[in-house]
Image 1 (cartoon, rainbow, N blue to C red):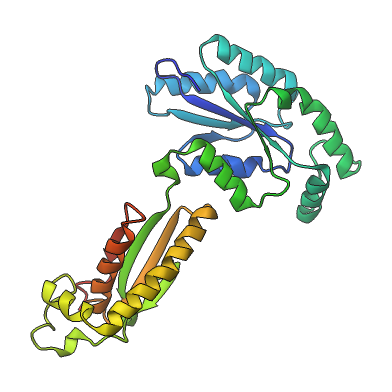
Image 2 (tube, rainbow, N blue to C red):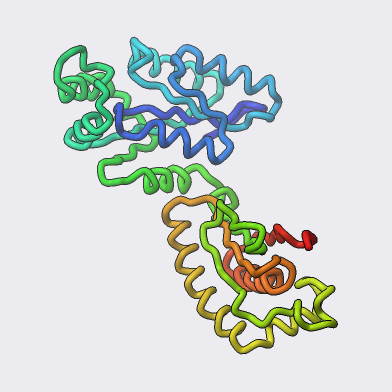
Length: 291
């Protein structure tokens, strides 16, 4: 995708109704693309002009163009030609699926096909496929979603249009105190209350898990080393799975009674070890300072 000065990268998402256009648009929106749905083709140039006036503030635009904008096929081809003539090379993504898959999807949501016009769903699909045949042949990327679930389709789009930084799973490790409640948005929760509590050691009680004396006390416990080895092995499997499923963010919560000593130490240690395989791991101590 080539650009003139201040001209945005522009992706046109089109294809068969029910093949996943909305999912594709949402995927690009999650990657910080500016997304416009159901845009009439003759407004494509207007979108580009507005982005140019923003002087780089809107560098990437994705627009969904479908049969709701009629006459569809010829208008879109003309609009693409006009963009190219002005130095903007749009990248066309065509979403495809088999007839059987599309029929099942329309039946499951109990909605008519936009070209059905009182006939059978398959009649609307056939009419749309005939209308889009030429455009499909000119697409830069054709994605067949027949065998893909929503997460797999989003992963395909993310791989195609996201940078390495954008597509990487972001991992946060949070320490917390059980007496203040569970973090409701945690993907995994670990309980460190089985470890000896520094609260009952006079010289450690006023300190926190960010002090070396407390860290040494907690980490030298045999059960701490055993827990860390088993926990990190399980977390590694989960994070790999999250990444393959297209998940963007994972929160690992580590709790103790008050969120002051043990959970702080363990959260810091877990984050340090995870950072070797998952760069950018962040640590948050939710309840530190509440006691």
